[in-house]
Amino acid sequence: MESQAVLEILRNCGITWTLVLSDLIEYELSQMQDRMKYLKVYQNIPRNHEYIEVDDDTVSQYSTYVSYGCSPADAMHIALAQKANAVFLTTDDILLGLIKRCSNNTIVCDNPVSWLTGGDHV
Image (tube, rainbow, N blue to C red; front, side, top):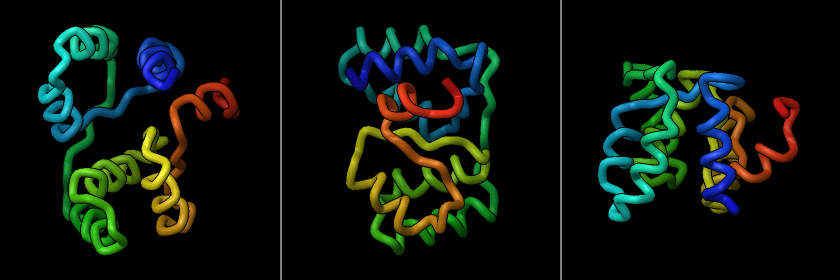
């Protein structure tokens, strides 16, 4: 169900929402072992997406999230989403709880299924 929600969100990016990408996301996609799954995701990435880059503020936020206990990769994803003022979607419930506790409501985060089925954006 979560993978279907992610694909539905990707299909609507460029139409209803804007997808935010980064070097880290592109790297993680390239590391997917299941090539069919990779192609399915890659083919649904809209051409008109936003690309966010790391700057000094992002590095500062990254360090803060690492100090809260996030993995380095998760901390960078969160910092970049915060910089872009984007919704951070993850299927990791522990990470969602950590973000909600530590971000002082400066970043909106949710599970893709919950976000797709229950937000004001629907």
